[in-house]
Structures are given as C-alpha cells and as structure tokens.
Length: 140
Ligand SMILES: Nc1ncnc2c1ncn2[C@@H]1O[C@H](COP(=O)(O)OP(=O)(O)OP(=O)(O)O)[C@@H](O)[C@H]1O
Ligand SMILES: [Mg+2]
Image 1 (spheres, protein in one colour):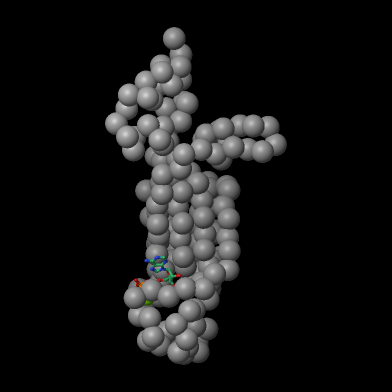
Image 2 (cartoon, rainbow, N blue to C red):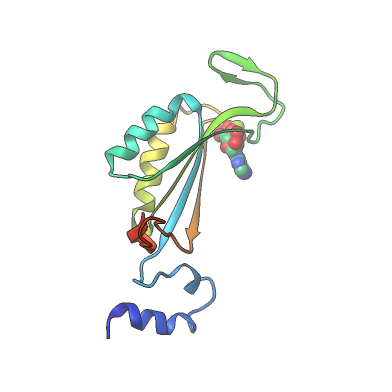
C-alpha cells in the first residue's frame, strides 16, 4: 500500500494538533511571515533567492513593536507617530526548510537596532496551485 494511503487512513487517530498539518504525502508546510525594515527588502529578497526560495508575497504595512510612543528613525528622520512603515514578507515552505529560511531572513534583515522586525512561523494546513490543482508542497 502506498505510504500516502497509509497516512490518510491513520490521520483520524493521530493526536489533535498533529494530524491537522499532515499532508497526504506525509510532509508538512510552514508559513514564515516577517515584518522588516523597508530598506532591507532587496537584501532579504536576494538572500531568499540565494537559498532557492521561489514563491513569496510582499506587502507594505504599518506597525509598531514594544517601543510604542517612542521615537524611531526611518530614512534618517525621527518619527513620533506610533505606526511606522514596514514591509511584510510571507512565504510558505516545506517544514524542513523553515529554519534555514528563518536564518537567511534574519541575517539579511538585521542591523542590530530597534525596529529590525520580527518573524512569525505558522503551520500550514493546505496549499493549492489554482492552475492545475497541485496540492501540498507540490503546490509551492
Ligand atoms: N507582537 C507583534 N505582533 C504583530 N506584529 C508585531 C509584533 N511585534 C512587532 N510587530 C511588527 O514588527 C514590526 C517591527 O517590530 P520591532 O522590531 O520594533 O519589535 P520590538 O519587539 O519592538 O523589537 P525591538 O526592541 O528590536 O524594536 C512592528 O512595526 C510591527 O509591524
Ligand atoms: Mg521596536
């Protein structure tokens, strides 16, 4: 019996929290979401391309961390406002690549100053390529 069929059969009896992220092929995926300084986006993109990451979503966002109400420098200017421009980078990758991505991303995004940003890692239940119905990590 193929491994995928065996895993499907047994998903129902796995402890909760484990089965949810288990794909038909037995592999799991993680979403890595990073909020970084806008001027770091090119360096971060290069670092991610350098380790073979292909799909990603990038958005312009605004946010604040724990220095809410304190001054932070953006493009040489000090801002008093508590929501500063940031860039959000989102990628879904096979779980076994997640730590490598976090490392490349944090090294490329770090200046060592406040406001460098944050990385959040999530379990991903499913991915589907709309064009042809590929699922799981085959869809990444
Ligand atoms: N707990 C959080 N939840 C969601 N977004 C966050 C959180 N913390 C930070 N962010 C986002 O990350 C951006 C950068 O956060 P920042 O690096 O200033 O975090 P910090 O905890 O204040 O760390 P540091 O002391 O290094 O500045 C924020 O502007 C916000 O968009
Ligand atoms: Mg901060």
